Structure formats: structure tokens, C-alpha cells
Image 1: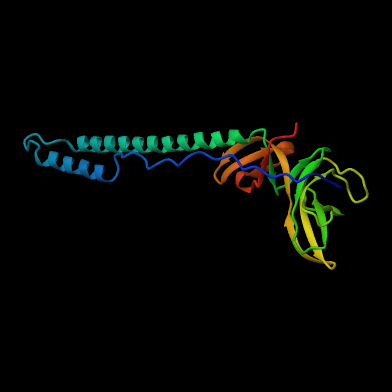
Image 2: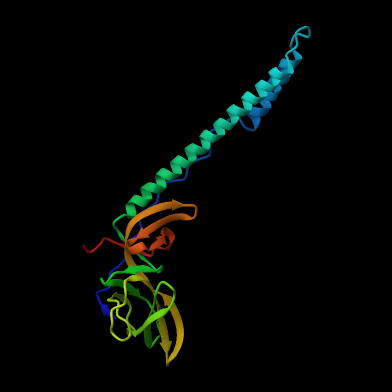
Length: 224
């Protein structure tokens, strides 16, 4: 069951970190290695023929150079990772405590959820379809042709309260009894944590739900 409430405009998600890290500083790679080989060749040409350098000494020089080169590359990589992580974690902290709107499943614990209804403009009928965590339809309810935010109070079709858990929503737009369009419904949920992943920032929501930063379509301060 849903109750209409006044429509409210969504805010803009907090900006991420600034410009990306620049190119790593010059190291012992590429041209520097060629310079090293030239110096080694010159050393061989100008060594005392009566007291030539042992082959093991050359091996030590090569090994030393290789070790330094790898260490410099490692330091450059760590610096880039640290800079990226610092910026990303700073962006994560800006989400904590905010309520975000997402079409991913969110947690219902008995308190109303704020849904944003948006349907086909030429629809003469609008049905809100509720799915549980398994993707099973648990409720279908006519909500009328209006757009905006509504409070969903978690009632099944027979009027009983649905159990706590994760739910997602879709809107079916009909015209003359025929479904002409379906749309995912955005729902607000509070952010309680976040982490930096290989695919972006993952926001942890109340009740065990989660969403990616890129999937957030609205933002607001919590009501309480």
C-alpha cells in the first residue's frame, strides 16, 4: 500500500575526487636502461686488459640495476594507488548518513519507504509491482496516473504487513487495459558504509542492501 506525499526534488550526488593522478615520475626504465648498457659497454672497452673485470662482477652490476629499477617502479605504483584510494575514500565518506535513491533492492523493516513513481505519459492506468529478494511478485497495487514520491507502507494485496527483508519495485503503465511500458522504481535508503571496488564505489545501505555509486539517481538528507 502506498500513500501519496508531496513531490520533492532530488539533490546531486557528492562530487568525487579531483583530477586523476598524473603520469608516474621518470624511473630507471626505457631510455635509462639503454644508458646503463652504454656505460657498461664503455667500462668493458676501457678496462685494463691485464686485469679484466670478472664476469661475476658484471652479473652483480646487472642484478643491482634490475633491483633498483623494480623498486622504483613499485614505489611509483604504490604512490598512484595511495593517491587514488585517498580520493576515493574521501568520496565514500561524503555519502555516509545520506539517503540515496536507487532501483536496486532496499531493506524494509516496517517503516515506510519513499518511492519515486514515474510512468509513461500517455498511460491511463499505473500499477506498482513489488518483488521480494528472490524476485517473486508479492504485491500488485493500482496507484493512479500521477507522478512523484509516495510512501510505501509494506502491505500485501490482502492487507497484511509484509515481512522484513529486501524489496524492489516496478511500475507497469497501461492504456486501454494493455501494458505499454514498465519502469524500475527508485527507492530511498540510508547509506551506512562504503568501499572502493574494481568497478567503482559500492555503498552499503541499511538492512544489508547495497548499490553502486553510479546507480544512485537521487540524494537527500535523512528525515530524522
